[in-house]
Image (cartoon, rainbow, N blue to C red; front, top):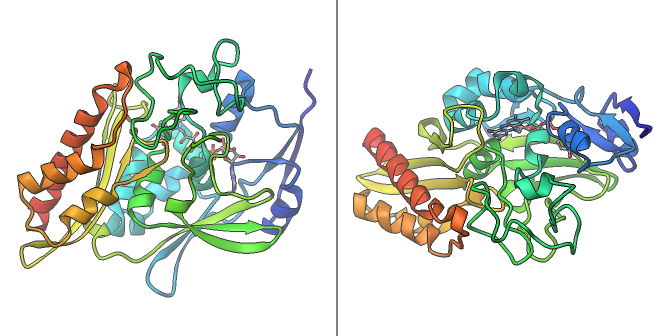
Length: 326
Ligand SMILES: Cc1cc2nc3c(=O)[nH]c(=O)nc-3n(C[C@H](O)[C@H](O)[C@H](O)COP(=O)(O)OP(=O)(O)OC[C@H]3O[C@@H](n4cnc5c(N)ncnc54)[C@H](O)[C@@H]3O)c2cc1C
């Protein structure tokens, strides 16, 4: 029998001081699953689900979302729905209503990969789970592995829908730790696997995610999230696109794009954005932008379909956004 200690943090200070030895518990929808499978083996769970869970307006007109806010409450908030619809849609495209009620914003950002080899403690080698053990996903059979940002050590895809929208929105992650508070651009939060895929985020030991800031945005109110998956609900993304465009005098003045399901991290489509800005929105331009973003995709036999699916989904989303903006 494994003895497991459970305690609950009353505030952020308590979470930071106890969190250095304990494992943080949000809604438990990922961590408890992984404990059941033997992937995670914490000895002390520190419940942080009662920490700040509101949405406050910031001085510059953005929003500060509490890390313990449930995914359901985030998606339903009228300010998120009106001003950041891609975020609301991304969250609603994930998991199920029951899971979204339990899952927290911080836990969603920290959720671990759904690569089946990662979860197969009995039969598979996985560098992310056991550093140096190998990567059975390469040459394996999963459709749920990444084609961008992969390394020799790991091809696991990042599973979060919410994080894809947050990356497109230039969100900032608020951290509280033994050395005090700090803020980090979300694009710097999730780490490429490189040679050490077990290091998944820039979270330092003892740090707690206290919240996420959404900066004000002139294009987010007309943004979109499209998710392609094997079933219409309750399935992780094969490919997803979060995007927003702002047109000025018939040209693209601003573009924000991120991809899900294809990257080892929520994937900011910087190459596509660079091609779009300043140009007239045409089908040829959207095709060039999608080609540029997927140019370095590296596939397995089971994921050979993904680059083309990603290109088509991106073109379709950009076409709809441009029509709406015109
Ligand atoms: C059947 C099923 C289907 C799903 N489908 C989807 C899907 O389609 N799309 C999608 O995006 N997600 C999906 N999910 C994943 C779900 O979104 C995550 O499980 C959930 O968001 C995790 O949040 P949580 O609060 O429950 O995290 P927990 O399980 O409590 O924790 C997850 C991790 O976050 C850490 N953590 C928690 N809080 C903090 C904090 N404040 N600071 C630092 N670290 C913290 C924990 O230590 C742990 O490592 C699915 C899950 C299930 C079970």
